[in-house]
Length: 196
Image (cartoon, rainbow, N blue to C red; front, side):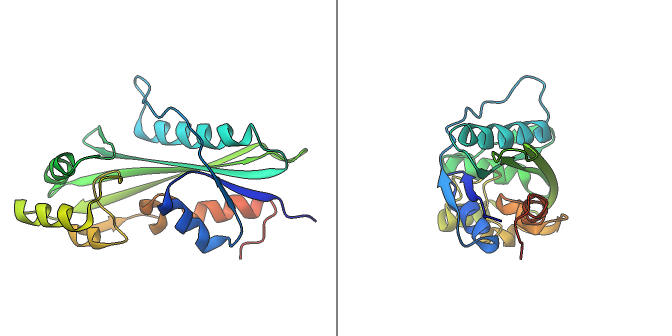
């Protein structure tokens, strides 16, 4: 059997680094999808919708490939915490999260463009992050040192951000970084890819 091309529908270096744990040979494409939320959409619904949209956007131009899309939505008290973009917003998000639980919905989608195969498979992981009480100075030092401006929730758990937490509750620790590898490995195996 010929191994199909595998394409990550993402420009995220974090997702590429994670996928590199499972696969040595894959391509990357920018999905160029609109990530605006829809009215009355839950964080989990938004994450799944965007993961599918990203994978389908890239898959539309590919034949005989497996395309992976993923998205993550962070939520504090029903309010979405988007990527902060600025240090000021990052500090405000972390101050709001201090002593609280933040929920991360991380979705993955695999679109199979090979003839005769299951078209779309998805999975959704929920991770609960318990922040410890954070002093204003700690938040400022963290944002200055790690500059988590492109991260939902304003931290990098794979780096210094881990020091901000009391606990992480999840079925898949890689989901918090942005790509749930346990679920993705299952989807790839179901599609006939040998993992490991």
